[in-house]
Image 1 (spheres, rainbow, N blue to C red):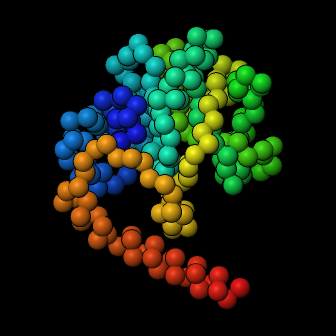
Image 2: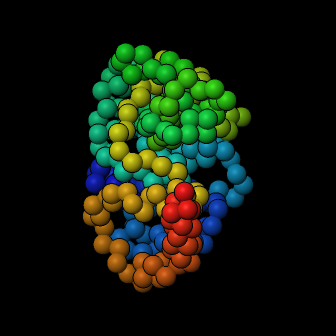
Length: 232
């Protein structure tokens, strides 16, 4: 949210499904509550289906789509500027990429000399590299229209991206971008540089969160890792 604010984005829509109550408690705080509109995904629609559902009232401007299960230290303004240049060349989407240590678990990209996507390997057993899809996209209105014209499509990586090979620009992110869905990854994220916050969020939610059991779990995991390192 702080990164979006720095990029000049004042209005955000957020999709809710898993742990709705916890997310709502996080968002129901000033200054977040007046910046976010909520979409409740009652039944899972897939990564493409949720984008389609959230763009029923389609704006005629580019749409920034972020899969929020990653910790990303990214300047979104640079991504948006890159997309504006790419769109002037006829590109319908810009995909943020990053270099991954686990290419088999990611969508791996191949691009031409101008950074246009030429091939895409989603969770391939033998991917041809380590430059991966970061699941952060800027979509032109024509792509949103195409998704609405194809209502049976549900998955963005396997059903949308392959249809637009050659019309997708890639913007490479050199900084931190990691999944934080495991204790190992969350522990690594604790040592990453932090975004400069431009939102004042020091409140009761933050104080309660600092007491959350997740922090003790990470400390315990770090101790186990340190002990194993000493033994080796």
